[in-house]
Image 1 (cartoon, each protein chain N blue to C red):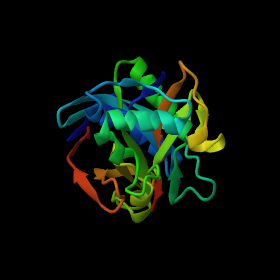
Image 2 (spheres, rainbow over the protein chains, first blue to last red):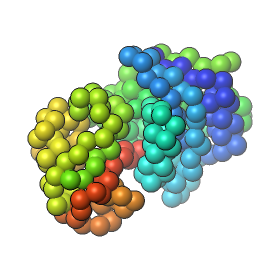
Image 3 (spheres, each protein chain N blue to C red):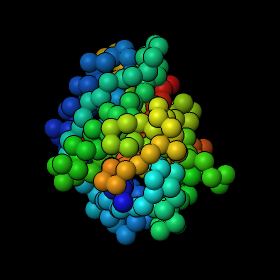
Length: 140
Length: 91
């Protein structure tokens, strides 16, 4: 289960709305207690995909490296990645799956008409062939 | 010895440490020593064919080894080796 604190959630939604009609992406930092992940800080990152970004995103590894360092500096962990699906449901697409990593939670925000609509979290497997839906709790 | 920073989800395979020291003159040797010491880590980093998984990037200090000499990239004592995932997606 992954729970997102209000301030972190606001950052994620605002980043997604600002990027609309393009996809946004970012990192989620927080703590892990057994199966429970708590996102305390969200870090908006630049969509580095070279090309039309309405249906694609790419994270620069060096940006993730910085996010990981920042998490360690704050005594927390990098626990997930978020990105948006403009005018589309928050599902884990084939493109998402084939470019995923099994180590983190992947939160997808559906932004429809420029406004937040709904979100889901996924846990992809190591072979990038399937992703389980993860229980997600976020502010309304 | 190089210092290897372990991503949170992989710490369960290295006795819950966030940093592990491993010996080696190249990235390949350091990761080889690391995964010999912690065999459960190996399947998370390498495919069955022994290649680094597609989503695994490795940095030596601030340098991405893909733009250096890949597995043969030199590692000096005191260097920091960081494992960073490669992530993208879309509709």
